[in-house]
Length: 247
Ligand SMILES: Nc1ncnc2c1ncn2[C@@H]1O[C@H](COP(=O)(O)OP(=O)(O)OP(=O)(O)O)[C@@H](O)[C@H]1O
Image (cartoon, rainbow, N blue to C red; front, side):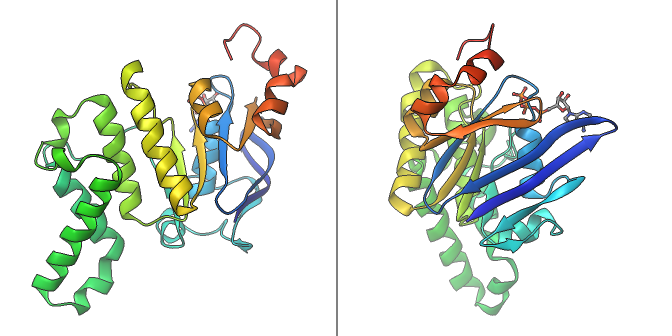
């Protein structure tokens, strides 16, 4: 479904992302781990088109999308959440999601009568809020949400784009320990029920182990291992890369 071939991004002499070959199958959940500065976010930026690689390619459904800008990749079904929140704090939760739905449908809505288009957007936004368990917070100002709710809203904004491949960048960042299981549950239901593929960077190993079919380990920009959780956890090179850090 999604693949990278020899993906490399250099700044001067330093390879921030170094010759990465990844394959994400339809419906697969691939967790990406690695010490701080390993190149995980940079890899996401190359896959989504925020950055252009020095060399290598990104393939979606076997088609080379390396030259496409982010919005065109999104239209093809590649969606991501951001570490830095893209939420409008002074709008309500529902307004944020409606805007994302509208942005996704864009030009095609001009063909509809205004009232019909409004109803369609409202229904789609409510369905998305339901999926992430935020329906009851629809009228709250987004800026007033707790961390866990904000992460859910970010996932809702991603879902509004109807992605087939979701890239989640640290979805548990800032979420309090007691809110983590519920968010894990939301992510699991979105992926398991709908057959979407997911690439997720996450520092919480317990979350990765709970959700991922396979784990990719990055270190100094390179892919150290990509295998089942059991195999990766038993890999001596991986343990060495993490020496001094809790796995
Ligand atoms: N635009 C840039 N200019 C210079 N260096 C950069 C740039 N973007 C990333 N880097 C460097 O590339 C390396 C990898 O960064 P990246 O954010 O991809 O790592 P990461 O694995 O996501 O780290 P973290 O887990 O801390 O989020 C870091 O050393 C970072 O300082």
